[in-house]
Length: 462
Image (cartoon, one colour):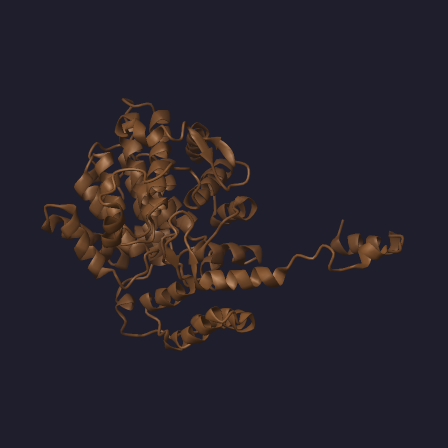
């Protein structure tokens, strides 16, 4: 039936009825949308991160991100005192007005032609990426460790690494050490609640259902139907898609954070469904990343995807790291970051001097940006080698967006070594349980997620 036929039918066939007094009161069931809008605007100006209570200035981060990408943000920065005053004085009218105005100003910020960002190549697609590197042929995963064990151990490690980081994300090395000393484990009882994994579950569902034909839109549809919590780049993309703006434009419209860590934080799952096949892992990372990110943001996802894929067929973490860096396009700014971190590691005999070089080099980027966190991953993997406990120690002490970093690189150890890589102190608190804010999988098990990963990998072969 056509839409006009359905609406005409409703008009001519519906019998009128007189409302009661209660029904005629429009305010009876009204949602206070105004209060929600005000809370949103204030929360994006300043809030505290769930889990760690670190300060989060999302809108200031948007200005910072655009400057990092080579845009003149002078006009946007002129709005900062206006918005701060509105925030401090609870001037809700002005806060709402300038919340919108900031996006308008950032959307037309002019390029700075001689900014270093524009000296690097820009990558719009996997084909752009593949034209610059040579991916190795796929390799069979050794059968000395059952594939289910590798997948299950990978997920155990990921939730453990993420849980370590959730408690401490958003702080720097010095403040973490000053407060907690050296961090070697969970600082409180861990849980599996984390926004990072929601997007990985969406990816798994889409790949399971669509196999090798999966598209960015398929993944985006899973976001729309199942994800309940988004922030920065993912929130911008999520809102765009709900208004009918689908990938790749969902990543570009009103999304200044699209080179932040939101794609990098979900790369490992692309490698988990492509064990031993870094090219497929990279291709999938481009498909997934394009929902919310662009260029270097997607290359961050590729990096973690490729490392994970290689972990299934290698026995040395440092080799995985080195080979993965070589599969990032050398003309990209992202490559300059991971290469700088690698070279810093080679210059030093311990993790902290290498990290201090990276911390200084990338301090102009937000702690949620891809770059300082990619550098932290390189430092932790290089100096920890095959020692999972030491990797968690180093990645925790680097600070920044620790849950994203810890969860992603932890996965490599389970994929490579299975259960043997992970001491019971990391897994016992979970008892295989998995709780999340993902519709349909609110309360399930890590075993279920591991099987879902295997199902998705099999679907890619179909």
